Image (cartoon, rainbow, N blue to C red; front, top):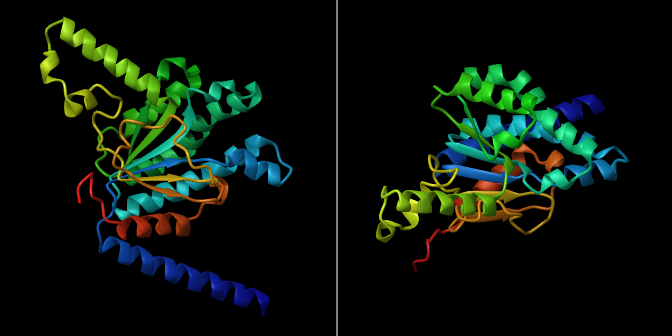
Length: 258
């Protein structure tokens, strides 16, 4: 009897989720969603598990949210996977995090190829371990012709470093006569950033209850809608993602206007 009730509840929940997805698709879906995936360590600590267990569980959530974003017709999903500051964490944790892309893409890549998802990365690849870099590069190469969702990993990424590097590139082109300093504006400068081929995020989601940007896409988030939740990333569900999209659709974006 209990098993039948559980099955009924699960089916009812699934039907409700399907209805919400259909309603969302009738309205404007954010073109670019960025997520600061936070709370893996705290999730593990609450369960008396090592921090790496939280990261491994969080990887499963990435699969679910990638599939849902693709189904909703979102064009770009950017995931803050590893910051330039994360190298300060314990070596065992960093080593584990550097193995995750290889494990994740090794098992998920065939599905990404089949579902027309293109993998991209922004960050400093040259500092990554060889096996991590190779896994990312293989995924990018195998999916470069795909035209569906762009799954963009921010890996060894820091926004301040990105902006400084962009300024250096602008100065170099000014000194070389490629551009004139009087022609520099927001649009021109944006082309010198790692996101030059992407639109700015429409929606930023951050999990775990923290309300800060943590050196993530500081230039690109100027007019982005923010949605914060206390839910830890390993507990983040399709329903939570749908809720964030629904909140976004009920907001009026003014971009500095009235």
